[in-house]
Image 1: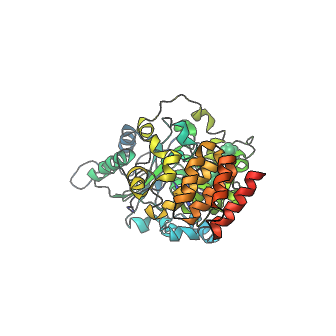
Image 2 (image 1 turned 45 degrees about the horizontal axis):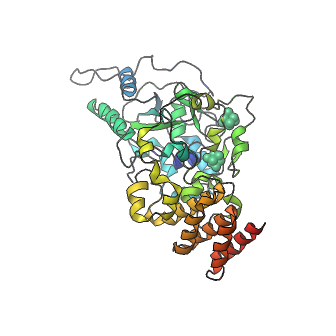
Image 3 (image 1 turned 90 degrees about the horizontal axis):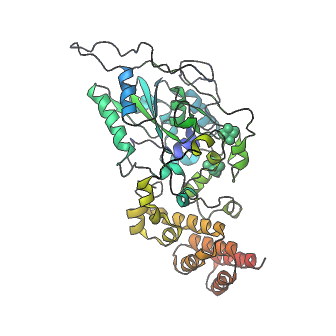
Amino acid sequence: MSKEIWQPGIASCFSQSAGVWNRRVSDGSRSGTARCAAPRGQTGPARENGLRTGGKRMRTKRELIDRARELGFCDIGFATAEPFDSQLEILRERREAYAWTEAAGLDLTAGADPRTILPEAKSLIVLLESYLDEAYPHALEGHFGRCYLDDDRVTKDGMSKRLARFRAFLREDGIASKAPFHLPQRLAAARAGVGDFGKNNFLYARRAAGRSSWVLPLVLVADRAFDPDPPTVSVGCPDWCRNACIAACPTGAIRGPNRLDPRRCISYLTYYGEGLTPRELREPMGLWVYGCDRCQNVCPRNIPWMARERHVNARVAARADAFDLSRLLAMDKAYFLARVWPHMFYMSERDLWRWHMNTARAMGNSRDDRYVGDLTAALAGNADARVRAMAAWAMGRIGGDPARQTLEGHLSREDGLVAEEVRLALAATRD
Ligand code: SF4
Ligand code: SF4
């Protein structure tokens, strides 16, 4: 995976916002205050309005804004490129909770200083992409985080093209830019005034996408200074919301307002969880196979946008069958690489077992006996004990005679971890 790639999922969900916003703006933004309701600061004299050597006029901030809009981005903001000191402080404080990021190849400490990304960095340009302008097939929304459903970071046939065009527009004017994957994207977006935070740590658009959280900030580090916009590093939740997101988080990952334990978040667990999912998390993880939208689904700040009529995204609808649970449980490496990985790529083919395990767990939590045949095949034929163990658990959860007969048949054939799960599952079917 290219290093020059934004990372809306893991980095933004677990690291880029968690707790960082709730500091005073000590991270290089212009103002020391919290929420700024001022109109977008894009009308003041832009610093770049001078003349380049040779007399050619440099592009103005207004022209960049217009180009971003032409390219379909729902908003754009500008910020200074000072280090994100508050992010560094959080990373130091929560070293243990974020230790996994190093193993995952995310150097968040380096990402907190834009000058490690581009030594001549002068500004951050934040483009905002709305990813819920179109609806997704209902069956997919129940199992996959929406931000992954039309993710073209591998296929590069959608938003990536528009981002490339915007960067080419900058380049034509002599502006070098980088699109880093490990910079605190949401915090940068709030510094640039395009959104504020919910207590669930997500960024909420300030003037686009119905002010919802269904947006991705795409941050460019640029080597030209622009007038920064008033920052909006603050929490925008209404007083009357009784922390619906915290109450709704099934795994207790949101420990309190803006305090996330990334290791308990379903998104993390589905693509980075080690080993067989602990028993106490299996049922709370529900039907999610990859990612989780629950704390956004329940949020009243998102309801108006979600209530709008919208057409179904045809690109996603066309490939929905490839993500059918039965197909995912049975998929081999060739299928994974051709049909799944180009769209959901946080796990490589080496982690195929985790895809199978997640799918088996989701089938079990569906309590739908049409999956007993798929689970029986996995229990009999999957080479990975973690998958067979989860298939046994899932059959115990679904219950019924066919599931019980399969489990009884495997009692003497398995040993160790799987045998234990088969025994427990059989007991569950008798409850
Ligand atoms: S609701 Fe889901 S995405 Fe939100 S914090 Fe909890 S587990 Fe993570
Ligand atoms: S559910 Fe309530 S507390 Fe949580 S982000 Fe939404 S408005 Fe804020």
